[in-house]
Length: 314
Image (cartoon, rainbow, N blue to C red; front, side, top):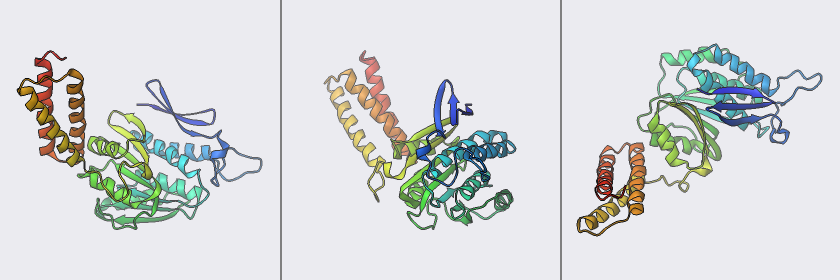
């Protein structure tokens, strides 16, 4: 577990000797919002450090294990909200009982009262009552709504949100469809936040979609991942076909294995390259939920590894 620290007007995250800058309040030119970094004589409205420290105390009063994920989200979100004086439209994809919702709402309401927060869940049940109780304590509120819909196909306006926060504490069955839906709801210049809580499949899928990303490890099982919609690895309107690519790689490996069986030697570097390629394809297959393809990839990978060992190419 890392530490969240305010030092020299900078919010930083430290873990295992590594320091990550989350928000620099000495960078005056980056702040285009209505919230000040520093207090001036006679100023009554809150400054950003006051707001974040107040949210930190609020987080500490809740579930202890959620303190770090919530305050990290607050700070990373604030680092985006300072970039404009205009209202933001934010979607929380999977709001559950509102642990993140109340913090996101207070940030948005403080930065700009005309901002909008849509909290989406897949059902209207007792958790919505918990959500309403948490939101009742938020001041000031932005424009706010609670939306029930099907994960993977939320019936909301496409390309309408500046930020989508994907709550990965929810055990999404098909993360690929969830990410595609979330990206379809983002504006082209929007940002996708993804909180993962013991969700390796969601994390793996996110990394396949975004080679360029920010990554914050809160614990071995919890991370916050951020990426810009424009940095996705496929063209607009085209979802990546990982399975087709993996099957193409399988065909290459099978041809090479045929050569091996007919005593045509392969060098170590080539074998290593193919082993690594199949290992990556296994991640793709797992992210797509294609168990049969993953098994076939693993079998071919093990054949290559066995050949490498038996041939003394280790």
